[in-house]
Image (cartoon, rainbow over all chains, first blue to last red; front, side, top):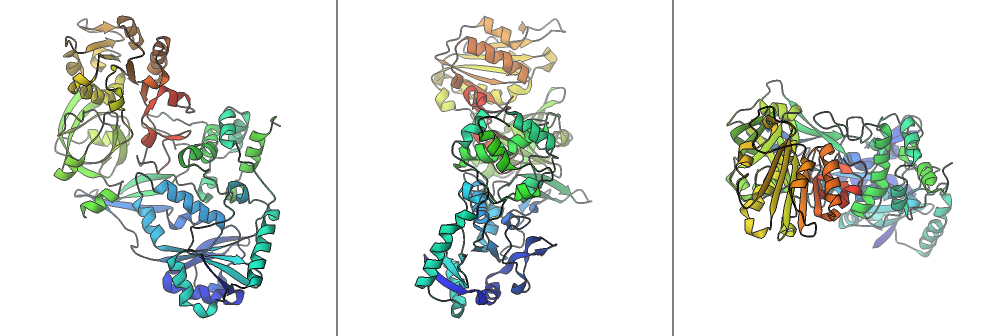
Length: 341
Length: 282
């Protein structure tokens, strides 16, 4: 892998230069404490220190609402929204890069989702390393480093970034502003190693994932699920902020002439009451506890069976945003403990 | 739009024309469909037990199991119960109306593995809809299977789907067709009276060489499974067809997930072994 360095003073000019490769989006200040990924007018506004954006980057690849088809009596015509528009997404931390890799698994396979991959092809990703806070458990989920899934990845090494060049597009971005970059020297290497060796010490929470699928099976009837169900408000916030929650609902909207219309899909949540409600009125998961359980079970157990890894990146968003303080780390820890306390 | 793009978009409905509507019983109709595009029609290959996503323009999409056998191509037959928004809209359409179809989806019955075995098909109510596809597949490939037994129950004679077609099988020598109704209010019912599990007293079954395909309401599953297990059927020789809420049909939208399986991709046909390992199934 090609590795170069970028002095921190050159970050803003470099990010400005990436606008030649697509519309630049990065974490921007939203409210007092939060950041959200948004369109960057001035690269100096980017919140480089932002740890966790409100929504994960999935919103660029499977938007909250998306038109799939326009229909008329002649049939269903696929709709390509803003076809060909390119983006550069800066500031994605390893957990979010892994989140996209997990979505790649879901949207590929026997049936490929053309809408998702059309967008995936048109977005360049510049990753950025981070120091975890008290909600991060990416280290436990194996997502605290990204070996791939980015075009460029910036590692903080003091007054410079060590920049991993992941793709040919990333290489073009570096070459287009070659004068801003420097070579890798011994000091840079040493500083990178020193920081990566000590990064682990910052993790305040940990979950043990070994044997977790089996434990989920064993504890399927655990009273902990009922307790979580009693607290859960079915608001679905956890799914909306989750970098790997991909469920969607499909709806057809008719124009007033009742001749033409569009078929849209929009984010759905398995916590919503009508999520498993079928025609005829039977609801396969009408209890809140069964819906909470289903969500965690699918992430930590079902997904492992289907794709060989959990659908959780340890980003901590669901913990931070749950209004009922349902905490997956706490839940897993309790499920794992010998006696339920 | 080119055909190539067509195949790349798994959500693309194809236009199909309703060529015939055969009323069955109240609120149930058999729709015969033909794709408007000849190439789509030619390329549509399904196996018994699979389903399609049916769109009624402007109303939405619903998963419907295929009732026709791939051995009888030409038209696609869907037996539909009027039960929700999409099916209510479908029932408002007449012959020659155009709807959207995409698929087929799901695993379907493992017909190749079932060859060389006795087949026991057990259906209750609308459960006959997917089993009819398997029934005619087996009858049209009769030499590939040993004994074929069909058990089908409805509440009353007027509630039996495909009634005349199935009554026609009563005296066929190459199938043992056991039809039953819970009660006969006509006094002219020519077959059995009683619930489906009772029919097990009428047949000899060799669990080693028989594969059972069961589809029906939960209460029927409960008692039929009991009968099969009493006769030492191995759990992977019992095939069940499950129903779930589905939107995409192709393993993306999440709705039909049960435990660690997707009903749309891994099912809708599951062995009983799969089923007892799936939480909250029936």
